[in-house]
Each structure stands twice: as C-alpha cells, then as structure tokens.
Image (cartoon, rainbow, N blue to C red; front, side):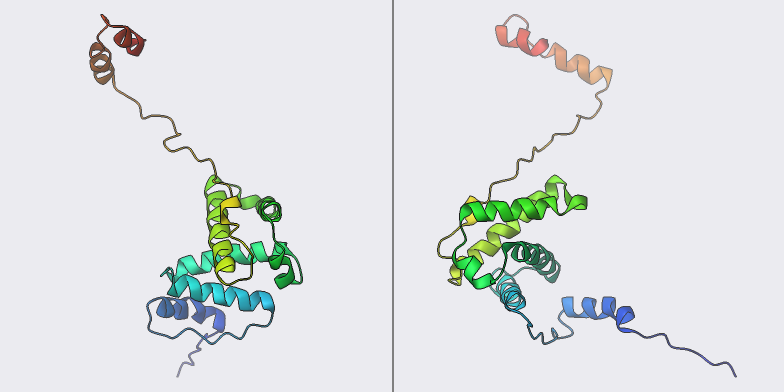
Length: 176
C-alpha cells in the first residue's frame, strides 16, 4: 500500500482563499490593527470598498501605495497629518517616487498621484487633515498616442498626398 502525502500550507492556500474572498464566497478575515497607521489603512480600505465600490484588487493596490505614502509622512502620524501642507505632500510624493526604482514608469507615477489624491480626500473628510490637499498633487504628464505611427503602404501614401489641394496655401502646407 502506497502512502500519500498532503502538502498543505498557508502559503499554498493563500491564492485559493484570496480567489474565494474576491468572489464573496468567504468573508474577509477580522483584522485587528496593531498601530495607528494600520487602523487608518483599514478605515481607508473600508472607505474604498463601501463608498467608492472598488474591487478587491484595486483596494489592495491603493492600500499598498497609501501605506507607502503614510510611511513617508512621519511620526506621530496624527500630529503630522494635522499639520500637513501642500509642500509636505509634494515632498512625500517625491520621496515615494524616488524609492520605487522599478516603478518609475509614467503609469506608476499616475497611479501614485491618483492614490495620493484619493487618500488626501479621505483624510480631509475624516477630519485628519485640516483642508483638502488633493489639488496640490500635480497631474502627471502623459502623452497619448506618443508612439510611432504604423507603417503606411505606398498606395495609401499616394492617395493621401493626392488629396491635398496644392492650389491653396493649406493644401501646399499639408502636402509638404
């Protein structure tokens, strides 16, 4: 008779449990915050789920970026937040972006700014930040359609150039 082994671990079950939680089959585990920062992040997660209706994957992503923002804000957290200025926010974001060497893409910068604005609105609504500092977070310059255009065949190019009326100034400009 062959003996069979079952390899079960928390690490092995995590993907399955996460999937079941994301689909509402399992309840979220009770999380007991161990610090002021963790309590704030837990409240932010509940806000994202309840008020904003975001998916669990988005909540996890936002929480990761928000935790990085709060880590760079300083301690004691509530006092720092109560005295937060626009210049402080920009300094925190600068440190946050510099500390993410693998995430220096435009998309990461856009996401960092989006989460910062969301978190700052949440903190202001909760009375932890005295005024709305979300407008101090700049928009990230990101050009749409910035890549090279697709190759155009000779017949299409000829038709395009033939459509320019070279008898007019605009047509001559477009032709060249």
